[in-house]
Image (tube, rainbow, N blue to C red; front, side, top):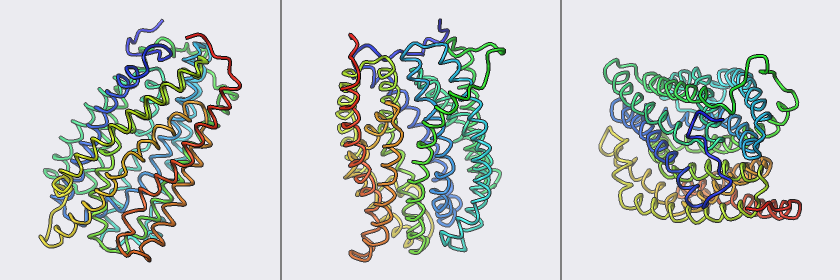
Length: 456
C-alpha cells in the first residue's frame, strides 16, 4: 500500500527503541537547523557588529510570534493525521490530508497579512532603540515575505512525521542548512547585503527543504488522492481547526510574554540586547532533543490513541520522561564547561563592550542550563497531551508561561536588581509544567476509565 518505506506504524514494538529511532533523525536535523541559525548570528555579529546582532535579537520574539502561528497550524493538523493513520482509516486519512492542505493555504494568507500589518507598530511598542530600528525592520520584512515558504516546509514535515517518517525532514534540513551557510557567506560577506542577506539565505534554505518534503509526499500511497476525490470536507475542516487554533493561540500567548520581556530588555541598552540575543541563539541547541522527543511523542501517542492502546501510551510517556531528564543533564554539563567560549563566537566590537556582553550572555546561559530538565518535561508532557488530541491544556500552559514571564520580568528586577532579568524564562517553564504535568495525568485517568484496552 505504501511506496515510501520511511512511513512507520508506532503501535507495536519497544517504546524506547521506537521513540529514540524516531527522534534521532529529528535531533540531527535540528542540529543542522541550529547550525545555520548560529552561523547567521555569527556572521551578523562578527561582520556587521553588535548593532546588527542586537537588531536581529530585538525582532526575535516578533519573528517567533508570526512563524509560530504557521508552525502551530501545521502541528495541529498532524495530530488528526496521526490518529487516522494509527486507526488504519485510510479513507478518512486521505480526506484529512486534502482538507488540511487547502486550509493551510488559507491560514498562510491570514498570517502573511497580519505580519506586515503588525511589523512597525509592534516594534514601536517595544521601544526599539532608534539605532537598530531600521535594521530590525529590514530583517523582518524579508523573513515575513517568506511565510508561504515556512508553511510549505512545516506542513510537509508535519505530515511526514505524523506517518512515522522522521528521516525525510532530516534530509531536507541537512541540505537546507548547508545551502543556508553557503548563502550566508555569499550574501552577507561577498554581496554585502547586510541583515537582508542573512534573512534571504534562510528563506532559500527553507524553500529547498520544502521542495524535498513535497517530493517525498508525492510517493506516499496512503495519502495519494485522485483529483475527483479531492474535496474540501467542512466537517473535517472544523475538526482540524479545533485542533490547530489552540496550538497557534498557545504560541501567540507565549510570544506575547516574550515581547514583554524584550520590551524590558530594550530599556537596558544595546549591550543587554546583544547579550540576550547571543544566548537565545543557543536556546535552540538547549532544546534540540526536547523538540525531537516532543515530535516523537506526539506521533507515538497519536497513533496509539487512534489504535486504542492506552497502557502503551503510558509506558511510552514514562520512557520519554527518563530520556528527557538524562539528555538535559548531559547538555547542561556541556554548556557549563564550554558556554562562555560559544557565546563569545557571536560577539565582536569594542573589547570592553564585547567582554561585558559575553558576561551577560554566559550568566543567562548558565541559569537556563541549570534548569534545563524543567524545559524537557514541558516539551514531553505538552506533546503527549497534543497526541491525545488535547490542545486546550497546552494552550492553558501557554497562559501560565505568559503570566510568569510578565510577573517575573516586571517585578523581580525591582527586588533583586538586574539579576531578575535572567529568571523570567526558567520560571515561565516551571509555570507551564505545573499545568501540563497535572493536566496529563488527569486526562489519562479519564481516558483509562473510558477506553477498553485492546490486546497488545
